[in-house]
Length: 94
Image 1 (cartoon, helix red, strand yellow):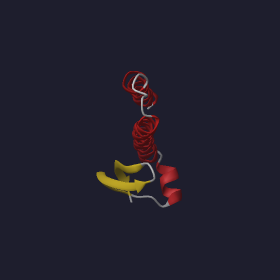
Image 2 (tube, one colour):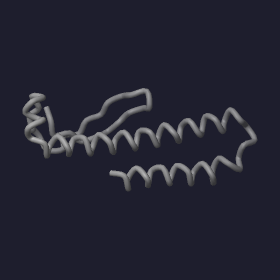
Image 3 (cartoon, one colour):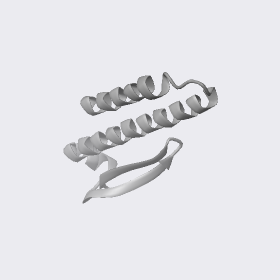
Image 4 (cartoon, rainbow, N blue to C red):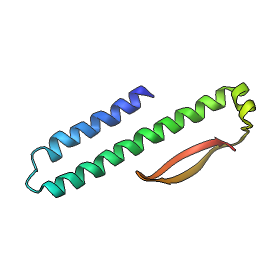
């Protein structure tokens, strides 16, 4: 999980320092572009966290049972709309 998140952060920083750092002639446009890119980074991190949380629940049968969660379908695609935008992930629990 950490490697995936580090990869997303590195890609974000690369974009910030190459694409945005030297194109600050219009501050409003630069702020908008940075917000768009940081929202994308946040969505990627959230999708990764959901993926690993799903895997953790799958492996922890006792907690699953306590919470009333049942493994029903493998990797069922899901989408939720957040303030960061649409988050896509695959879920096994119901």
